Image 1 (cartoon, helix red, strand yellow):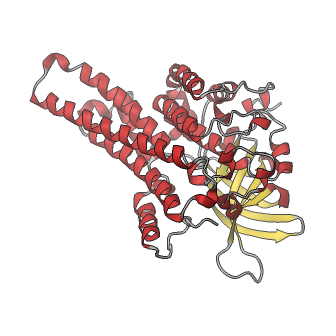
Image 2 (image 1 turned 180 degrees about the horizontal axis):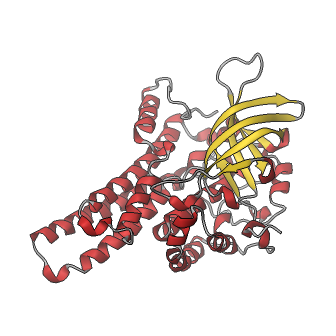
Image 3 (image 1 turned 120 degrees about the horizontal axis):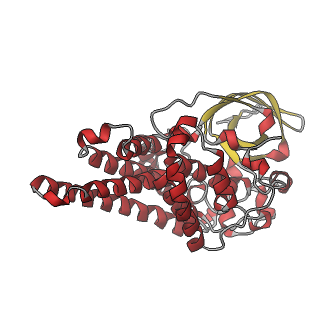
Length: 403
């Protein structure tokens, strides 16, 4: 018998019905998540208890359609729940962000694929966006032999979503980008996640050996960006017809924010321990703390502003420049969080070097969370500026046209 929570939990989760309830549930989990941080890093993936907590509390269902047991609370709740979780356990916050965001993506697949997927009310899906290998169109679907990288939380999942390029015979132009939905038994996991930061995310490599993916378990990325994906036939909430960067990737920078808030809390406790001997140097620490906390709060506000503005607006009404702004601000948020943590860590001295110190662990994780390719400032900033100037985009993976 498979003992993973995705299978061992038989009842459907009672999802939170409001933003406030979702935040309250996330905050209630934080003490337990903190207690398991050391175990999480040693395992190099989430403990089963963390996964069960997320499932039983319905926190992964914030973007899941109501018809399949979700709450449809949307990306603002997803962002702030992720921040709360990541402030206690960065790895759990990171994996929660991806699992939750993928529920939005999965709601855009064909109705047939969705019925199959959510026949298990506790279904979880990891993903691979960076893939290699040949995807060959065949009768009834596609065959893929290749690899995918950085599949966070994959050990606990029963499905995988893979973004792959498909070059059809005789077709001109760039390959079509298509999402494929693959059951766990069809691919292999390579245990290669040995890292300095985000150690507990289990973001491993997957291997596909001539697997067959039927057509109904695929969806073109172009239809998603147009707001016309097949899932719109059964999921009417406006967020499923909105742009991906205000929904699917809306919380990409939220783990870095959460880690930064966790670091600020730990640094505050450090300052409290020194206030009995205030001197000029400590006054400088005060100013540095205030500056870092303001930067993190400002980045948080920017992230929420974009989610509020575009998460339900029809994709056809969002300009390429506005799409580029969403991606720009996600990268800016992650890098601002990283810089705030790095600036304060420089004030920690030798005490911040000890492995038992929360400061060094959160410092590692803040830099790990901001290292995602989609959050790398130079790439995203270049694509944004080219979009504003009306220049053709030269950065792979950053196409901001409506299609």
